[in-house]
Amino acid sequence: MKGCKRVLIKFSGEALSGNSGFGIDVGILEYIAKEIRMLVEAGIEIGLVIGGGNIIRGVSAAEGGLIRRTSGDYMGMLATVINAVAMQEALEHLGIDVRVQSAIEIREVCESYIYRRAIRHLEKGRVVIFAAGTGNPFFTTDSAATLRAVEIGASVIIKATKVDGVYDKDPKKFSDAKMLQSVNYDEALRDHIKVMDDTAIALAKENKLPILVCNMLKSGNLLEILSSGNGVYSVVQ
Image (cartoon, rainbow, N blue to C red; front, side, top):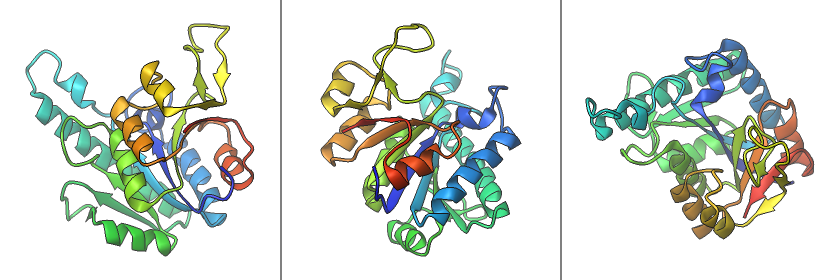
């Protein structure tokens, strides 16, 4: 992945909650912001998408039927806006120029998503955080991240997780699980490898967009992967 000029990084909302499983861990927020700063200082243009699962997940909110799935998903979109504003604050605290663009209009809080404006921000060296998913219910933030990556012409989409890459089986359950250096799109779809949801993988396949899976908790790993091609990761392509 050496030589990428523009990338989109997807973090789960749960990643921001640390060990608590809910809310925002300020220490984790600062850690991620410092990792992003390394990339910005290396001249890499960065788009970010952060999920909202640390606050609410639309699917979970709709369980039991009290809350309709559509409303649950809109609640989840609002959660991603909260996370985006928190990340904006953390990055700005480190001196990084940032813009949040939301797929649903919240003028008092952030910009609305406009493709050409997003490109202009990136060209000026600003980090752009894409919030509120696609703006439509029934689509995950994985799908939103892939869509935005394609739209902005990113060289790769990075799924920053708590594991080193893609495994042939769950490494938390099986001690003999083996990490796969490379997986093709069809294998990921056929074998239901949960790198991202199937819609996101299919969109990446259609647009020949590599999906890089790496451990966000290894300090400097993102920079090493993007600057030298080394580091620990798997790639779906």
